[in-house]
Length: 405
Image (cartoon, rainbow, N blue to C red; front, side, top):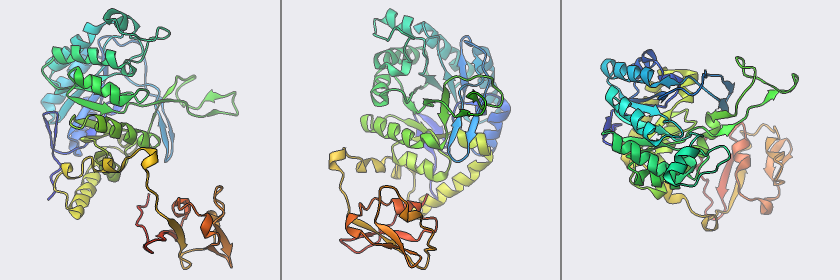
């Protein structure tokens, strides 16, 4: 039986399923539900010494693609302390306290972290997307853009010093959460030098959704008259998250990493671990389908590991990194499509691929007619709705086994 347990910066997790900081984790009732269905840890909703302004969630869900979440509920330090205390007393979960210190005061970060530790938190997660750090940078003698301040997580030197202050203030592990708007491997490296015991990536990139084109471009959020730049969540950002996790892991081979961003299936969890994450984190999946999906993900992950002969998550952690090379070192195979005429229904989708003139319909079936012009790129394979196209290695005559979506 595969073992799903994880040692995460000294914290013992029964499995790798961690609920990311969000409205999923802002009340005891929700945290207890997360435990009921099998989560091992939660990161509580972002808290402040002083909540900077009122905000509540407003969302747009584009099915199968994106989840726009510009804002959300914020906790005061008093609310966070109460939540953490109750969660520690009434659940057996590992409780990670997500926090953001005051933009212009270095000691404020340390003070806030200490308060959360005193409430019973097992780990501090530093949200490093604070935009108001100009004064703090000046006090530390660190350069920061003066126009609108600078996002903390974009400044490696400042991130290191803030991390150092927090790590010195508490006796529990400190995790630095990366913004994808930064050079995350460098920022993560400096946070590690400042005392971070773990790295979390990624936070949501900024974006904008579509608008009501028949109503003067007004926002299409159902509960808001206007909008701010949106945090983009969901499947769209998963490849971006993979990239950041891989780059952080390649620079920091030993540091624990919590990797999240658009993970919605057990397979995504495996991919995230193969790119180097110590644990995957989930948010959008639970938003849209509830914590009830955790047992099914655990079942399929266990079955997969059993089939592959993996006894622990360490057996496949980071194994995909060996195939990442610089562009000039990419090795290409001589591939061509092969059409299964019994499966082909002549829909013609493969003949309308804009960059390709290799396949035409002949007697109502797709056929390769210009083989020498084929890139072997596989777009026809991915596009075929009937799985009638496979990719053939011309040199060996073997069909390449490609995963489905």
